[in-house]
Figure 1 (cartoon, helix red, strand yellow):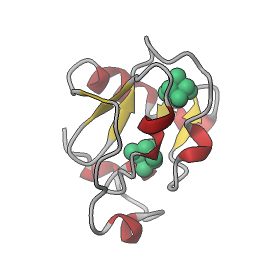
Figure 2: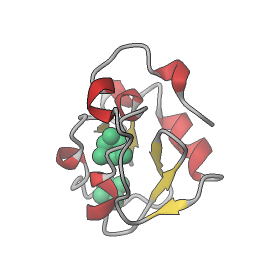
Figure 3: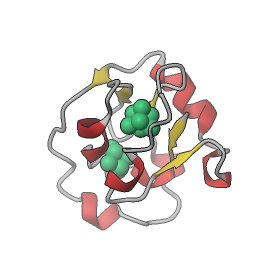
Figure 4: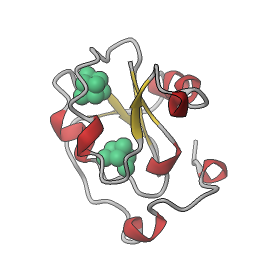
Length: 104
Ligand code: SF4
Ligand code: F3S
């Protein structure tokens, strides 16, 4: 499965949800996750993310986030259309230390 990682936090651009053929994104307040049970590994979401936050689970950058995706995909609501990103999304792009800011 593909995995949403730290750089999505507080950016939440949502371009990824528009292209997913199986609608397997789930949305929290300031982060999105992918359901590992539903993702078909098509890879089309990866280049769409302006924050470059999506990687395949085989990538080292996904390791710490795979479990987070599985956990919240089970409780957050499904999202299939792009909404309005946070007003300060661009400012948070590539900022370090965002992991602690994830709103469950
Ligand atoms: Fe959806 Fe494909 Fe991305 Fe998986 S890899 S989340 S199926 S767009
Ligand atoms: Fe997040 Fe990138 Fe999607 S910032 S909401 S993974 S387009």
